[in-house]
Image: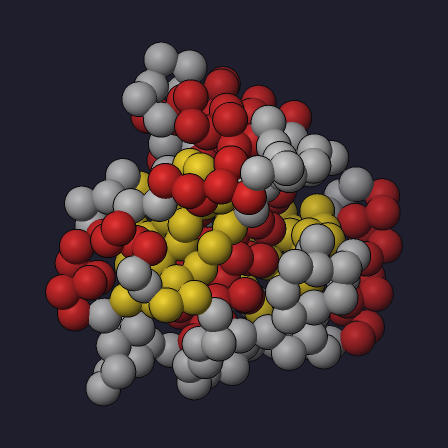
Length: 247
C-alpha cells in the first residue's frame, strides 16, 4: 500500500499537458447506463468514485505491480479523466479492459488503468462521451445515505454547477483520490480493505462555506477543475471530507 498511498499524497496537479494531444494521459471511466433501466444518479456517482479509489489503491498499482508504470506516468502529468457510458454488450466488453468495477446498489461503474488518449482500446473508444443525464438527486446534509453508513469519505458536490453525470463522475473520482491525503497510510489501508466506502452529497451554501474553509486549512481536499468542459476554469466542483474516525 505504501507506493499507492505515496503516489496519491504526493500528487499536486501542477503539470502541463504535452504538446501532442495523443500523448495526453487520461483515466477512462465507464458508467453502466442501460436505456430502459438506468441507474439512480446518486448510486452511480458513488460507484464511479469508489471504482477510482479502489483502482488507485489496488496492489497491482504498487511498485512491483503490473499497473505501476502507467499509474506513475499518469500522476507525473496533469491528471485527467474521461467518462463514457456503456450498455449491454458494450458494458460486458469493457470488463476485459484492465481496471476495477464498483457496484453500489443498482449502479455500476468501471475505472480503467490510465494511458495515452491516442492508444485508447477500441472497446472503450467507441463509447459516447459527455451529455449523459440520469434521474436521482444527491442527498443533502450529514448522516449515512448508502450502505451501512460506515463511510470513510464524503464527497461534497457544489450543486450550483450544472454538470452532466459524466462530468460529475470524473469530479467525484478526482475527489476520492485527493481524499486519501486526508488519511494516514494505516487508515488508507483499512479503508481499502473495507472496499473504499464513501458517499456523494450536495452541499448547501452554508455547508459549502464550511468545507471551503476546511480545504484552505488542509483538513478537507478541494477539486479545482481545469475548465476543459462544462464549468469555468478554476471552479471548485467537489470537496472531500474524511469521516468516521481519526487519521
